[in-house]
Image (cartoon, rainbow, N blue to C red):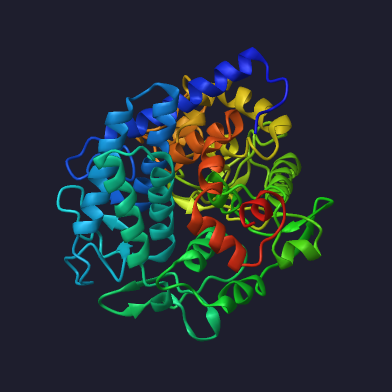
Length: 444
């Protein structure tokens, strides 16, 4: 997919943004075990989801001429060899359990960090990266064959049925100290990717009823004159689309609504802009070209009196529309990642991100969050205070990876094209009840 009649200046702008986002992985993807840090901040552990993005952006970097094929291949192989050889015993000192992995791992040892959970969703993001690499490295060489074999083995090792509870619900995660987390996937979210991968497994697939059980918890809403399948933060409408082309394919739920998940994300993008235009909480800077509430870093400062109102400011949080949380913090990367869905409103927003005072030479488009309501004197001594407001210090791997993939899908459709040819993706979609468009052609 390409934006029709894309201006030369916009093409240059997107290419520069994409390269800047890719640099996160170019600089942090050189570890001996292939792990990639969650953020650019000192002593950050590895996030397995960020590794999934890394495995997906390396092929983009190769095609764009930013790294060589050999270098990208070796980075992918190094990471996948680590995960294959890692400790899967499920102990507090291991890397994972039953094919799934702990959310965060120590960069050097690859063992569990922060007493975190074995994350079902983050493992899905990791696997999406492995499948992307396998779909890209298709040459008949020893290393590329090994990579494809590792992707098949790692995907096949995941025991999806272990994470599925009675009546079909999939849990969020598991801890060795306390067992399964009490939370189940309910309501529309980024778990769309999780279910497709779980249903596509050739070894331990989710049951046929699991997807329909999940969709039965959906909320169809009407907001600002727009009907759409509700999820509050933008990332929930974006992550699955980084890999899967949902244009023109429908499951039973979307077929009844005469829509598809891609169109739904377009509508959700417009809802976000309309919310910012209305600006019900009166935050500084919100408007038609300044919007985007998602999972992002925040000021995390004590409550303040600002313009006659007592304001609370969170740190890292999943912000959302319309019921919050909302503390005036915008996620520039979430705005950029909406490009594929609604370029007509995203391109002007990106231009404003890049020229706004708080952007600090373009940082607002890359940093995890910025807040124009918080002024410098309210962030005394805090890193990230600028002359125009607060901006997150450092960058986050999830943000950078999502931007690289979504911009590439707009510029060339490369990642969508690769995954349309992936048997696990096709099988998972088909078992979930998707039909139509490219999927019908692929399944013939």
